[in-house]
Length: 247
Image: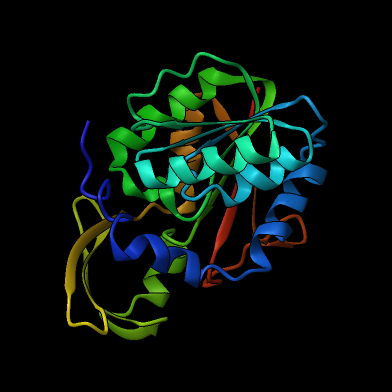
């Protein structure tokens, strides 16, 4: 099943995404996962839409059995090379997560970096139901997003321009409805004059809508944080971490 965002992270944006993630963020997020969910060596973790594996690798270093899934072949190859060279308990699989068969039972499923918001309401509910079916009883789902209504409605900017390394990154966004979403057209210009054009769609859900979808999927929304495990989410904060449990 294709998605307009499937090809967004190839080309220039593959490296741009790495550059815009603060270096200190990943260890803070993985430390939260280990402590909050009481993860132990041998526990099973699924990292969906894992990107270049920043969480998967950190968790595997702690002895967790990690399955990392992403549709971009270059990311998966990169993760596989790290896992093999360091003999980590990490399996990286190239697949569209909507089609990937979730056969194992996991202690934790993570969906980080705003990835869940690539999907419209129908596909989001379908994916959440499949995640619920793959979790052990009492297992958890952790979703990181900045496309909640409570964030996006306040922080929306129609036009942006920035330099990321040697790439000029220019974006123009529209906040649209039915379904609620932000559509963004981006242009990436390199120093040699080459150019890439990309279009992305982020679907916007309120916390109440997420609560409803999680409930329909068989999960209970337990908490929403802005700083994982330390600060509960408040209106307008720049990112959110949703913790849901299978009961």
